[in-house]
Every structure is written in C-alpha cells, then in structure tokens.
Length: 62
Image (cartoon, rainbow, N blue to C red; front, side, top):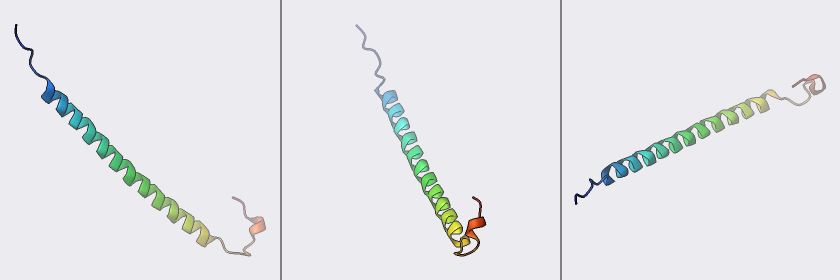
C-alpha cells in the first residue's frame, strides 16, 4: 500500500497568503478611514469658518 503525498505545505502556503491579504486589506481600510475622517474634519472647519453670525442667515439657503 502506498502513502499519498502530503499536501500540508500547500495548505499552509494558502493559509498564509489569505491571512496576509486580509491584514493588508485591513490596513488599507484603516488608512482610508483616517483619510476620509481628516477630509470631513477639514470640511467641517471650512463650513464653520464660512458661517458668521448676523450675516443674513434668514436669506441663506442650504
């Protein structure tokens, strides 16, 4: 009776590749989230600086 070849090295390689792709994706998404958060903060600050009290607020449209 012959012993079938072991496929464990291929299984380990596939497992390692999947986890590496997952961590790269997680890092990319974290970087994108921070970038969007910075953009939103900049937009919020620009809106706040553009608003001045008593500048005809009743005629302003959004």
